[in-house]
Image 1 (tube, rainbow, N blue to C red):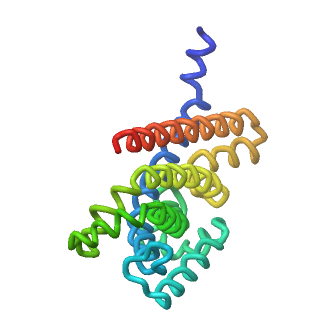
Image 2 (image 1 turned 30 degrees about the vertical axis):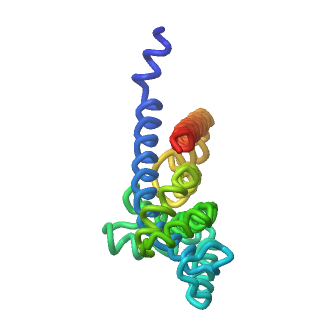
Length: 228
C-alpha cells in the first residue's frame, strides 16, 4: 500500500497525469475541428458523385477536383504537415509548440480522413430510401439532413471513433517536435533521459485510451442500430 501511495505522490505520476491531460485536450479539440472541416467536404463528395454511387446532385468535374485535393492532403505524412503548418499555428495561437499549437495541424491532418469516412458512410445508405424521400417532394437539404445523415449515423459514429483513435496516434507523433502530451513524455523522459518506465507508462495509457474509445464507439453504434 505504501508503494502505491508513494507512486501517486511521485514526480512520475504527476508528469504522466499532466501528459495524459494534454493528450486528451489535443484529441478532443482536434476531433471537433476536424469534424467541422471534414463533415461538409464529405457530404459534398457524396452528393456530387455519380448517380450510381448515390449522388443526388451529380457533378463529375467538381467531384474529381475535390476528390484529388482530399487525396493530396491525405498523402502528407503528419510530421511533415506539422512542420509545414508551424507558421499557421504561430499566426493563430501565437506559438508553434505546445498543446494548443498542435491542435491546428492535428485538425487539418484529420479533416481529409474525416471527409472520406463521411463519404463512405453516406454511400452505405439504401438508395431506395433516398428515392422515396425524393418522390415525397423532399428538397436536397431535407434529403441530406433528414435522410442521409440519420440513416448513416451508426456508420458515422464508427468513423468518428476511428478518427479519434487515429488522432491519439497523431498526438503521440506530435511529441517528437514539441507537441506535448504522452508522445513528448515518452521521448523526453523515456528516450532522451534513458528512463524506459516513462515510455512504458505512456504506451500503457495510450492503449487504455484506445480501448476505452473503441468500446464506447462500438456501444453507441450498436445502440443506434438497435433503435432502427
